[in-house]
Image (cartoon, rainbow, N blue to C red; front, side):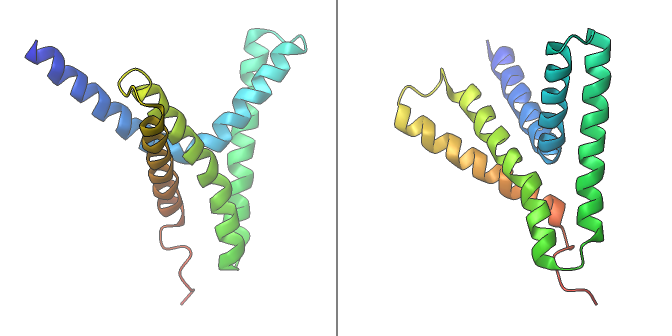
Length: 138
């Protein structure tokens, strides 16, 4: 019984680390999934839809990184970083909701936990992307 509890704690910790690491890539991933779903719905094969999704995700990530590196203004860089951080916050909210759906019986507390989880994930993605890039150039 204790071994199962320890394994579940390790699994939850691993999922939190994975979610934190992948939160930065939530926007390109969402765009890739939607492009693949659209391609599959319009008659593409499963392989073709996967290829379309892969190209769309890589293109979205490349364009957003290019937009971030080509901007000199900290305000415009912040806008690009927020374009990454908002979907990361939504993904964090959904992750915490999925974990606490059965564990927290109160709907109000579940929403509070989900909001805190989404905010922490969004802010951590914002800080991870911005790093020192938003500080004035020397």
